[in-house]
Image 1 (cartoon, rainbow, N blue to C red):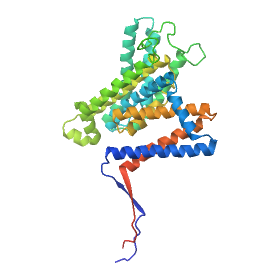
Image 2 (cartoon, rainbow, N blue to C red):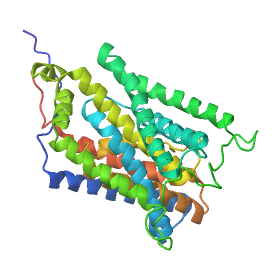
Image 3 (cartoon, rainbow, N blue to C red):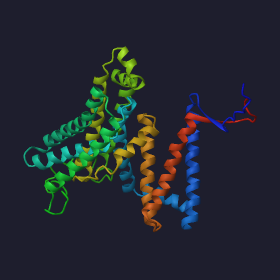
Image 4 (cartoon, helix red, strand yellow):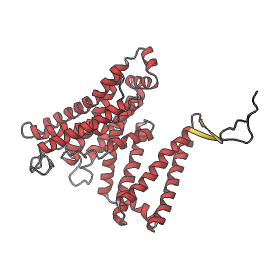
Length: 371
């Protein structure tokens, strides 16, 4: 029998038992504080600026005026909507990375209706047609990879990601086709003279938030609806079972293929609705960058919130606050955008990294060798 000594690892990574909500919240808050402290040190060393002034400027950038506050809330609403759209698919373990493309296709459907039907149908009917077209466009665009996944178990991460690039090129094609003036490479403001297809402002004209309120209300309604749908509906239960085990779902009589296609269609339809809000309610034009990368950011928001629609509200607010605040820092202190992006990246890294310590713990060797 060999007497060779076996060296134990210095530490082991062990999966934790279920952590209490209060303890998990404490770890997340501690991560944010640690990130802010590190950013403060980096700011002083690299720029010589007072970090308190920098953080104060971030607050001003997001909430410094009434208009900035409403724009921030509107941006939060768009990010929240896309996050909510991806959530049922993610909970089912269908990795829909195609939110960006689904938003673009929904926006393209809305823009098509505005351009082709703007002078042919009444305003109310046009908006209704845009609504249906955007939901169907986003839903159908997402269902294409869902069908391949359900029937032939293809890799949905790759297929939904590739669909983004197809959507971008489709929007680029129609942008050139409809460009105004010719050669500009831009569509410009659609129906600027008639406002045909422009979604209505809510509230009285003198109310600062009237032009932003529609998007915010839609986001709140979808948040409440998604929470109820996932937590209390039969379809929400089926999504959870399929996400836990496809074999178990089939054993209890759930039609897995049907659940996959239905759920991913809902995911894409909400992204299509977001495209409608961007084109018909906010920008009144269409570009390849109209989604602004939010389709990818929403993946992080959904994961940070653990697929909980209520927590997503706060996760979206945090991300948008960092983005808008970082831009204000770059402007006010004469720093380039890269530095503000570095601060944002550090904070997000700490927030995401702390999830490791919530799920796992590190146990160190107590000494000695094992024979």
